[in-house]
Image 1 (cartoon, helix red, strand yellow):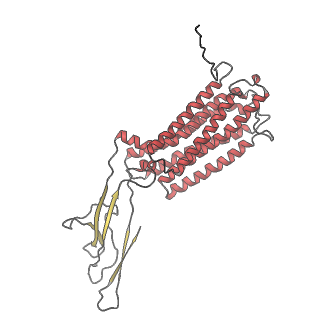
Image 2: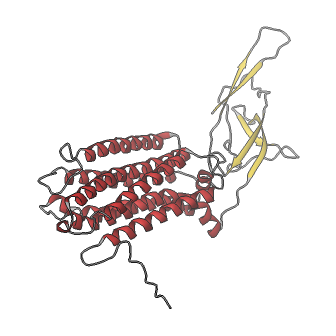
Image 3: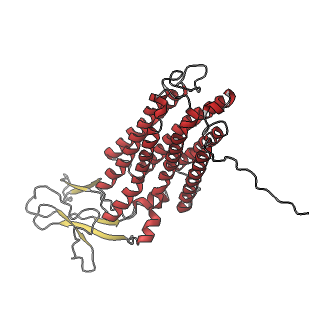
Length: 395
């Protein structure tokens, strides 16, 4: 006798009175996208044994994101997407606790991804005003995360700070959510400005500048998605008692923003792949011996290249030490100083330190270092001594 097998009912049916399935699908899809982005980042690096601080921050964000997504999916099983009148008080209490936890973990996910991206920028540029601005921004993010978590944790009266059924019962829920959303938007915009300032003065091709700025600039998608999330949170400021139904759109946009927050930290690592597709310029190192000798007019020293004939002078662009090094001093008895030192100059168009992610971002960047050579003549009292010289290098 043939037995007709019947398909099992869906875990979260999509009906006119239950929209929980929309939340679950969105949360799961963007969590998978985030995990794939992290895996892709590690594969591109090909060196997962040497974890950097920004990698650790990204993995912590992924763990927090997993917990937050689990809370949202569990909330869908206890009333999210349904009307409040269809829920028991027990289910609504569990829904409130899960949403309460998901918002706290959401703040931590946003904060850790921002810190991770800031650490990546710091790995590339550790000096100057940009590094100071980066550290200040990191301090602002940490301060916001601490204040946002504490404000959300105590948004409603004790002993049930998670129970936010209406504005009368929990009037602070809306303003606190608005504060957190505004800080997310402002700090993400600041994180997109830092790479632009970093690449503005870098001596590299325009195409390479645009690629790096565009990779970091993808972070702008997070504040763009946060705006509709904030718009759909209007129910927090009204007198609605149907929070389980009206929170659906806000939660969907929030899960998209969290997923993109993790993904955009992984995107800068794609620079090596993009260079390979577009065709990257070859990187070479040129070692050239140099010597310092009198300039011919008794006023200084010039740096010239040592060729076979020892007469070829270096071009202005061919030396990483500069086109000419001068000793500004008065000539004595119209005699040229009999002092010479061989110098090895090197031009490199690649920064070799740091992780693979940093090397991919900084490949092809010309780094100029200026050297000052000083020369001091001293007369001794010994009859058989014509003088002494001392050369000092200062970078």
